[in-house]
Amino acid sequence: MKVQVNYRSMSTSQGIVRNGDMVDLPTAEVDRINSMKPGALIEIEETAVFKSAKPKAKTKKRARNKDGTLKGDDPSTPDVNEAWEDG
Image (cartoon, rainbow, N blue to C red; front, side, top):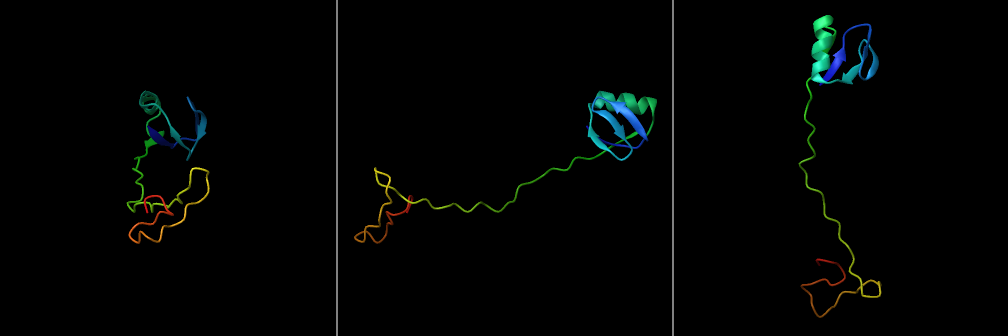
């Protein structure tokens, strides 16, 4: 559970934390500390991080011959570009 320390300093499983620090502590430890020192830790709401809804542009990849050289386009097939994979 992510919490903010609202106490001058205290020892936790994450080491010594001070007022204003944000730490990730187990729920049981947060409950134990707050029972001994009410208001010492304030729970921080975790917000979801979303990736961009914009789809990634697919990069084109040049087609290669068996020996590794680049393929050229065949002019006799105007509807297909053999120089590119998925062309």
